Image (cartoon, rainbow, N blue to C red; front, side):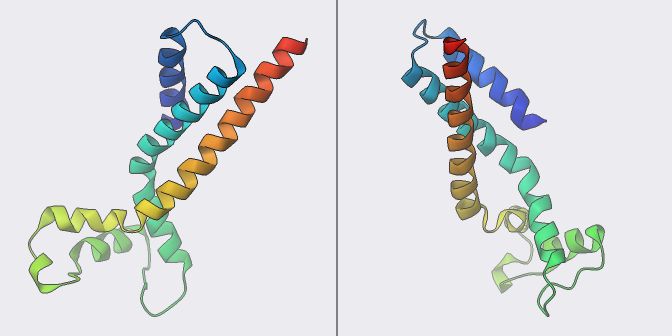
Length: 127
């Protein structure tokens, strides 16, 4: 929901800034708007995706019984001694691994939406 709403707003702002409706402009607008929208949405859903992935992993490291148990264990278990009382460091644990995931998934989504918007423009121009 956040993704599509932010995508529509960013795309509209980029389209309003230029009267050029060329194929390359549409491609750039869709790529940039979808990459930025996915990056924004990623900050909201990644912690839940991290917990889901860890709960689906059946090994000795991640033994969570439910969502609340996973939230508590990720937040309270210190990884290093100097991390014990730093709330910001504890919150960053929910985003561990996000950089690589974000780069790959954001690029994929940006390419996908760019192709979709370009194909849509091509079909509209032909008809």
